[in-house]
Length: 330
Ligand code: SF4
Image (cartoon, rainbow, N blue to C red):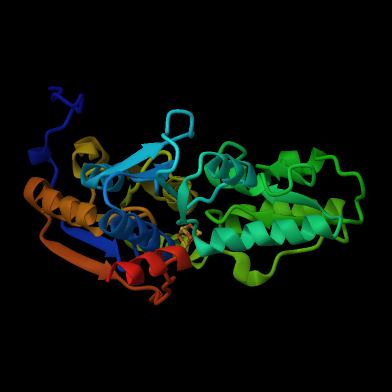
């Protein structure tokens, strides 16, 4: 019999013994900072504050902030002059900054410091005359922002095939940078192809790799041998969420990306003993607990455990312009 969701199984037919969560999960320091910025800006600047693009790729978080008075926009066309404008954690291009200046916006920049670092490297490499291969997804908002720093110098490459064919004016003067939501593993094949084609390829510093992306993928790899199925809480438009699912699949685990507990389909979980759960860098803990409760209630989960890997203690400070507003408001 099919249920309303189209499932051929009902919750009652599924029984799971253990639910194992990666202890390292959810918000990274860049996301904590971005949300903090919007909330504090609402306090000190008043409602509304505008935000260019979703502050992070999570519908729940965006809806919460919208309810508090944030207005999310994809471009500035219909935004009145002179309003408070926050740039999302993904960063913006110089062209967007120019448009913001023309509209006299009062800007607060929530770009993650790790993304800013990639922008600054792109500017420096372009000044030194390098062609920069930017490894990333051409339609991702972060890549578009980085690309805008030196469009004539940057070529976006999304896979090894593109790395084999990308054209550059001087093969001895090539460098590469990566979208922050890709890990070392994601880029390995592409980098290999680039190194073969351009033996003098300039490589980014090791600490350019986003610690949060790498740690969350490592946690997934570590938990996979101990579970039957992995649920990844995140969003389909969140690059780091999709990658977590793919990492689990590449390690041989069945894995599903969900936004909320109600997305879970019982047929994914029939005849399994141990269910794994992780959350992407843009997913709030409240949604993790919602899934835990849902699994206890609907699938009779008897035991909930956490799987430890590394601990994180990274924190980013608020942008100077917001710190100053907070000080002045006291
Ligand atoms: S995933 Fe990394 S680069 Fe992206 S916001 Fe978080 S810390 Fe910054």
